[in-house]
Structures are given as C-alpha cells and as structure tokens.
Figure (cartoon, rainbow, N blue to C red):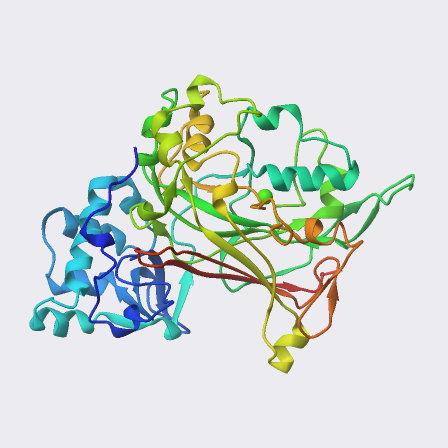
Length: 441
Ligand code: CA
C-alpha cells in the first residue's frame, strides 16, 4: 500500500538552489510540494508551482522550456494549471514521474545548461501569493483524535467517555467548501445564536467563544465510481497529499445548534489551509506502524489490513502559534500554544478514505478531508484553545503577558508542521495563517 523509498528520499541529495540545502529548511529537494501561485499584487494568471528552498518553481514556465518529456511532461502541463484537479486525476504514476523529473532538474549535478534555463523559472516565495490549489467539490471533516474527543467530553463530565461509536467509526460530517481560504485568510467573527447556561431563550450575538482547530487536510487525488467502495489496501493510492488545515469553530454557537444533526453555522464561516500540498511520496520516510491498544476494540474487517498496521500512521509534528494584535504592533512575535504529532490519531488517513466510500459514496479529484482536531495525550498537546484553557477556566498566558480564554479580535493563529528524524531529510509543510476581524454586528 505504501510508497517505497527511492533515490528522491536520499538524505544526502543537494540542490543547486542553495536555500533548499539549509538546515531546518521546509522545502529541501526531497520534499517538492505543490501549490497554485502568482506574483503578489500582479494581474498574472494563477498557475501551479513546486517549492524548492525559498523559491517557487513556476511549472507553466518550465513546460515552455521543453526540458521534460513523456509522462512527466503530461503531468507538468496538468500541474501548471490554475487548479490541480486534472493533475490529481492523472494518478500515482504521473505524480511520481513529475517528482522524479523535477528532482533531476533541481539536483546539484544537473547539467550547467539545464541549471541556467531552469533558474529563469524560479520566483521567490517572498514575492508570491497563493490561492486554494484545486476546485474542491466536497469537503468532509473527520473527528479522529481520541485525546481531543476525551478532552471535549470531560469538559462537561469529568468521568465521561467518548460516544460508543467513536471507537468503531471514523466519525465525520459533510462540511462547507465556499469559505475555505488559503493562508492569509481574514474573516469576521461570526454572528449567531447562543444559549447561555440556565437561560430560557437563546440570544443573537457575536460569537463569544471563538476557537481554532489544528487539523491536517487530506487531498483526494483519484476518485472512485459511485457504488464501488475503495478497499483499505487501495485507499492510499487515492490520496495525493496533505496540507495544514484550521477548522475555525464558534463554540457557543456549536453547542446550541449541534444536536441532533451536527455542526452547521459554527463551522461554515471560515476554514484556512496552507498553500503547499506535501505529497504522500515525500512523506514515505515518516510512516510508522498504526496501532490500536489491545484494551480497545479492534477495527471491523473492512477497516483492517496488514499494510495499515505496518505503516498506516504518519509522524507529522504540529504546532499552534498565536499572534495578538498587540504582539504584531509591538513586533514581539507569536506565542506557541501547543505542539503534538499526527501519529497519535485513532484512525489512519487510509481508514478515513475507505470508511467514506464504504456505503457507495464517490470521491472526486480535489475533494478535501479534514483530519479532525489533532490533540496528543500529554499536557500542552491540545489542538484547540477550548481544551487548553478548559473553556476559559484556565486562560493561557502569551509571551507578552496577555491572556486568552478564547480568541479575540485581531488574533492571528498560525499552524506549522514538519517531519524530521535522523537519517532522513526534513519535510516541512510551511505555514497556515488566519486572522480574526471584528464581527459585523
Ligand atoms: Ca474540526
């Protein structure tokens, strides 16, 4: 099921783009994530690009150079479009052909004439702006971290447990595409109904309990035909790659509206994703065994496979940072709120894909999954502020002394992610940043 390691994962490989070789760089030659970009503030057409160091390799310009041929050229033409859906639809062989061709062009032993030509296709990331990288047909948000689910449950009942279905089903709801934006998104604090404890009627007001959710976005590459479920051993072939995702959440609105049909207005006003999609091939060195303690129920047969057990989990390190308006004005920088890893997730991304399609639902190229809030088992590993502050009962203190129970106007929330371990290149996700504006009352 999983992609085997090959020469594009070689930790010793270096690029002639020097910034890609720097210690701690998010985008070394072993990563090569995809985005859709243009020069910031220009009227240029958006087109596909690949990150290398602090540069974007402009795939539309590269195609014109005639340095590629065969499947890699077909893939580059599709990946140069203003939306990556056609590239996703080409499937694994094309994604791999392009990765391997770009690796050869960008490696420090590429012919001098190649380097001179390809250098002209680079745009500094500091001069680029990005857009949502595909036409997202459907967006599904999962709920697959048991630590998050337990933290939320125990806010209301300290002895409570997750709902019985959590341990058997990768739980999800169908979300909203129209308000998904790329990093840099700014949105107004939502208005809505909330029911105060003990009150007899709800009030219409600006959300008073605004929160973020640290999640990963899973981009569906190739889809399936309606009525033809994707078996677990084939599920990862359908995943193109992964980005960072912030599922902004209005907790007061959510807790009033959620029963019995699930979140609605509490979740549909904004979702922020990082511009770069890290491919499953780039993540191959960071796969690890997916485990389920023997004290827990084991998955039903359709969610069980040896390959998922062997390498279904991904060790992606994640952090949440908060930059208040005051910190931004004073230039004192953001404060780290939490850090964890995706490896703790109760269900794997493959199990999400298989479960989603098991009843006959079709997925399409460019569909997006949210992983669900990612919280780890330890202190300081919670992926939402409601967990960190126990619903504002224990506010967090920022580096400049400000306190937060929930988010305030002007707050920017930054998500960061990367993979790192000895003997392998660091694979970074870049950043997802979103900013809260005051409510339109
Ligand atoms: Ca969520």
